[in-house]
Length: 91
Image (cartoon, rainbow, N blue to C red; front, side):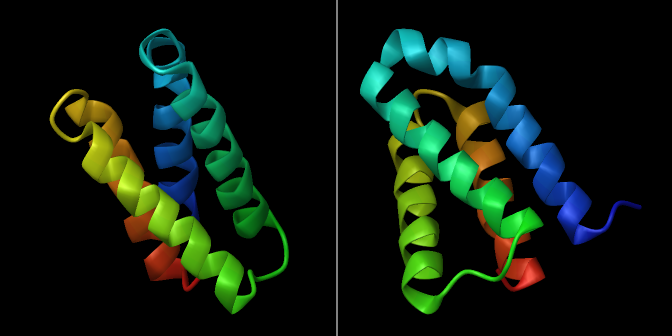
């Protein structure tokens, strides 16, 4: 059974795999999503995020889940997995 950090890596990889479709639908959102994913990867591999950085990342990811849960449920589920994994890790 993978640990929480591995679950986060898997969720990030799932989103990465869907970025081409997101780029076609909404290039600006794809750019923002790539930045959020970069922040999540940095948080995973680097020092803990400060309170405001953590809140901002979680809020942006949560907003993204809501934006895509109807039109792109697999992407929304993967983003939700990132949010859950970050919370479990305490990032």
